[in-house]
Image: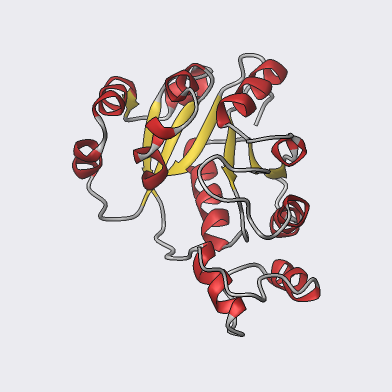
Length: 223
């Protein structure tokens, strides 16, 4: 891949990072030709309470999880940011750093459905493409009909059926891609660990070793 190839951006609390995050990034990177995927753990998220595990610890788990994959990178800008972390601010920083290089914001269909609750959501399309990952058998018509009016309009106007525009233009399109269904959730993992259960084969072994060494998630998380 050359220096103008698109870069994928995958944000989240990663509390903890697990195989569904990693597989989403891998399949989307292969499917649309991303040169890199940057994992961006949030420091203080706007839509939920502050995670009990520190931002520095979540950042380290991301680094451990992606180790050995040269296409994956860890980006600590939100961990270092003071105050609430907004995707708009992160994309603005990256756009200033990377110029007109195509950026692809990766997310699941549930996150996209709630996009109108995000800070300055309409301006996100000026900064990046949005790539929506969905499971096999998911109805795109159902997704479209469930969207609030302004987001449905943006979806219909910006939706593209091929990846060429994602590599040609710097931002502005919406692309939907099917990925392998891995029904793994961080809340499930935290609950297992809090109850003394096993999280083997849900998270990378290096991450699980870090969790055990630092005695993370020992108290049941009610959220």
